[in-house]
Each structure stands twice: as structure tokens, then as C-alpha cells.
Image (cartoon, rainbow, N blue to C red; front, side):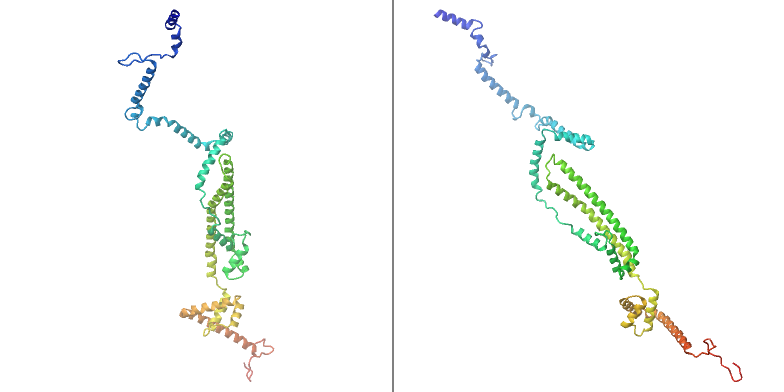
Length: 392
């Protein structure tokens, strides 16, 4: 038993391929030798190795607490230099965005189709929705302008009153009323006397409606373009119908500034026409020469009391084809001018007095000739007188 045990021990310790060979894989590959020590078993070797690694790490980090690579680079320049690649990628993306406008329609359609078919499009849409929910809180408090602009309403009322705007697009009746009021007569008389004014007013009206039609067409075209663009973009980013409606309102408010300028310039043109034409005509409007002669004759013939009665005013108005109020106004203005310029108008008074005397003398001579007797053969002339001796 002992021998066999010894033999077995010899076999276990000495025979190649025995337990030493079987346990070879789990032995340490080499022993670590320290100064003043011999070979260290494998567990101790493992412990010393960990301490050595810790010492090496401390030496690598150094006293500053930074790695040796970062000791000479406290601002991490080398590390940031390694992050330059994402910035370059962002620059490429921005460059691609800048050249989108130079792409052809086919290229743009292909790019849009690729985006719509991309597998990450739903994720992109959800991210955009989240961002919009966060940013929409800041724009909810914005007060929108409601109601029409009072200045535009004032300009519209003015254009309607002048006969430029309105459903008729001609404004003939309104223009005739304006002309008649400025002329102080009936609408028919205004149409006859102020045909030039009506022609120029019609020209302003045509220009206004032509420009207004261009404005409305441009506004509608731009609004349709923006609405179609927003509807197309709503397939990629969240855009609600209310937001589209709000954008349309913003566009209309922008265009209303152009509309206000157009209406304001039209009103100014009408006012200039009125001041240059109607007001000037009304200031220098005079009666006819025949009417002026009749009125002046009556005035200077009644210079002691130049205040005609109502019957005389009606008679003068009928002779001059004017109204009684115009006769009264003429006499009032004439009395004022005469009192201010008595010396200057005295000559005119003498002229009319002489004219009145001549007219009266001619009338009296005609009356005396008509009342004198005549012989049958005289032909209306008085008969010759004969003396008793037969001489004339």
C-alpha cells in the first residue's frame, strides 16, 4: 500500500502528463519578481499587479489630477479638435439647404418623394410636434387685429360721396349731384357746364378701379400660393387649419397698406380736381352781358335808393334768367363795391345816366311823332305850310 502510494506519488509529481500537465492552464504564466524578493505565488502576483496598475494610473494622471495627455492642454483643445467633424457635417447640411433653390423641379420632387417615403419620417413628425407644443405657448398671447381699419372706412366713405367708388362703377348720378352743388344750379345745368370736370372725374374713376382690380388679383394670387405651400408643408411639419387662416389674415393686413395708399392717392386727386376746376369756376362765374346791363341800369337809375322791392327783384330775375336770390346777392355786392369806390364808379354811374337819358329821349321823340297829325298824302310827314301869297 505504501509503495503503491509512493509510486502513485511519484507518478503524480513526476510523470509528465500527470496532474502538473492537467493543472498547467490555471497556473500563472510568469512570476513577478520584486527587488529583494523571490518568486511570488500567483495570488500574490495578482494582488501586486493590481497595485502596480494603480501606481501606473496615478503616475499617468499626475499631481494635477489630469491625465498626462491633458496636462499640456488644459482647455481640451485636442479633444475639441476631435469634435470638429460634427461641425463640418452641419456645415455640409447648411450648404445643401442653401442650394435647394438652385435645384430643378424634378430634383425637388425626387427629394420630396424620398423624404415622404423615409422610414424615419413619423419620428421626425412627432419630434416637430413636441417642439411646436413647447414653442406655441409663447405665441398664444399674441393679440390679433380684428375689425376693419377706421382710416380705410373713412376713405371709402369719401370715395362713395365723390362718385368714384360704389356698385355702379360709373357714379354718374353722384358726380352730377356734386357738379350741380358746386355750380349752384340743377344737375342738368351742371352736366352741361362741367363736362370737362365729369370727363376728368371719369378718368380718375377708371384708373382707380383698374388699380384696385390689379391689387385684388395680386392679393388673391399670393394668398393662394401661401395656402398651397402651407398645405404641402403640413405633410412634413404640423400646421393646423387655424394657423393657415391666421397667416391669411396677416397677408391681408399687409396688403391693406397698399389698398390704403391707393385710396388715399385717389381722394387727393379728386380734391385737387375740385379745387382747381369747380372752385375756380365758381369764383369767376359771372352773369351774361345782357343780364349785367339790365342790373346796372336799374341800380344807377335808382341810385338814391338801390334797394329793389320783391316785385322788382322778380321782374329783374325773369329778365336776366336768374333766380331772385342771385338778384338780391348781386345788389348787395354792388352796393358794397359802390360805397368803397364812389369816385371810381361815379364815371360808370354818369355813363349809365347818359345812356338812360338818351334812351328816354328817343322813346319820347318816337311817341311825339306817333301822336302828331298827318295829311293823307304826306306819308306820315307833317304837311308844308303856305303863306297867303303862295310862298312856302
